[in-house]
Amino acid sequence: MNMNKDAFAGFHPVVNMMYFTVVVVFSMFFTHPACLGASLVCAVAYSVYLNGRKAVRFTLVFMLPMLMATAMLNPLFNHEGSTILAYLPDGNPLTLESMLYGVAAATMLVTVISWFSCLNAVMTTDKFVYLFGRIAPALSLMLAMALRFVPRFKVQLKVIADAQKCVGRNASDGNLLQKARHGIRMLSIMVTWALENAIETADSMKSRGYGLPGRTAFSIYRFDKRDRTALAFILACATYVAAGAVTGGLYFRYFPTINGVWGTPYAISIFISHLALGAVPVILNFREDLVWKSIALKA
Image 1 (cartoon, rainbow, N blue to C red):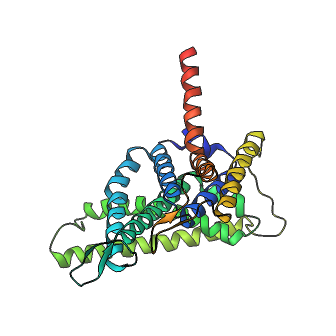
Image 2 (image 1 turned 135 degrees about the vertical axis):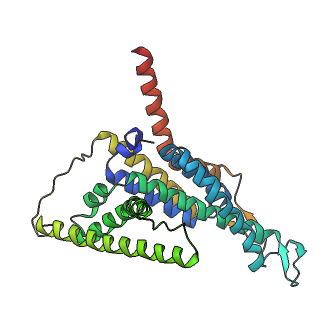
Image 3 (image 1 turned 120 degrees about the vertical axis):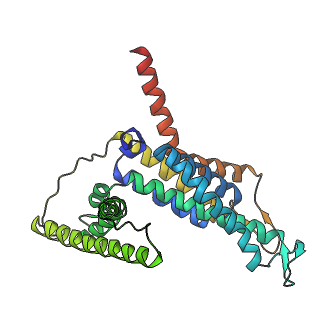
């Protein structure tokens, strides 16, 4: 999907960065099933909105099998828990708690990966340079180059593979030794291209005075009322959820028995705030789509 159609990506980089920082941290540290489920649904929904069929295919082909594999592997190594369901061939118990903890760990892993895929689509290199260019010029340049490297590497690899195929050096043809030789040749070309590209980029940035004291920079970003409203909402939800976690509103344990806070009004309010925080980009995009549809109908 075209990035210009993503309403949330049009917000100020500070808003984007604050949002992804909060949701990734919450996804990594909150193990309550309600929080994990809400984060997973919001992350996958936003990823599908950004990347369309590609995200759906990635979720079904890669993420779902990884979730199932991680969930099944944990009980083989973790035998804690008091609810014994069966005994494994080696004599160790298979417990309900270890199985549920494996599902929670797998959900956390898939959720974090999904959020990072969204971050990679929304936080472009110019946003990273804008945010960290003055604070840490070298770090911002490294982050920008790292984020750009993977997609450029894939495109260049396809170009080199097509060129090698034209001269009869296709990595998928021939016997095993020939395939290895052609693959090593392509890898050598890619490494040479990457090193030359890095040197050219460094020389270009140095010639433009990047990182020098007093250097000015052009920016197209302006922090307006819309950004202030979005940032205030994100911070309010994040603060309420974090306060709820500190005060025990998100308490949940898997060992030795499953126990946690569920149906209290305070816990429900925290769950709603957590869900609202995760759904911010999807809600903004849905509202934007409705506005455009109404304009199209009037026209």
